[in-house]
Length: 190
Image 1: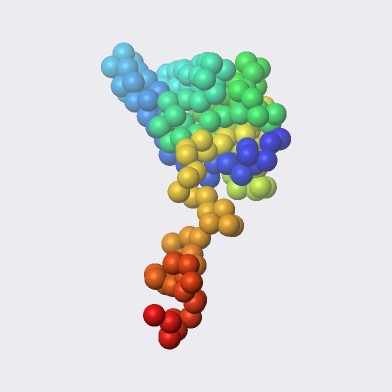
Image 2: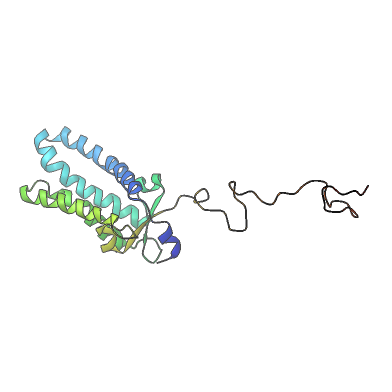
C-alpha cells in the first residue's frame, strides 16, 4: 500500500455523504416507480427493497470497475482504489458492491430483514476501526476509499519556508546597503 494512499484515507463522514447521494440517485426513482406500478404495501415491503438491491449493486459495481468511483464519491472527492493503489478490478468491484448492496434484498423475509440490518450496521461500523478505515466490503474486496481533493490548503509549509504565524528574518533598510557603511545603526560615519 502506498504512503500517499494511507495519508489520504477518506473520513467516515465523507463516505456517508457519498452514500446518501448514491442512495438517493438509485432509491428515489425505484421507490417512485414501484409505488406507481404496485400497491403501496407490496411496493414498500417487497418490490422496492429487491429492486433497490439489484439496481444499487449494478450501479456501484459498474462505476467502480470503470471509473473507480460512483457519482456520490465523485461529488464528495472520493475514489475507491485497490490496496495496491490501482483502480479496482472487476472482481473487486463486484465483491465490494455485493456485500454492501445485497442485504436490503432480505427485507421481505421476516427474520432475515433483522439480520440483514444488523449485518449492514456492523459491516459499515468497521470503518471506524483501524487506520485504513475499511468497512467489511473494503476488507473483503481489498480496497480503500481515499480523498482525492487537492491538499494544498491542508498541507503544512516546508520546514525551510516561514509560515504566516512565523515571519522570516527582519532586515532593517539602509544598513550595510552601500559599501563602506558599518552595520551598526548608530554609526558616526558620514
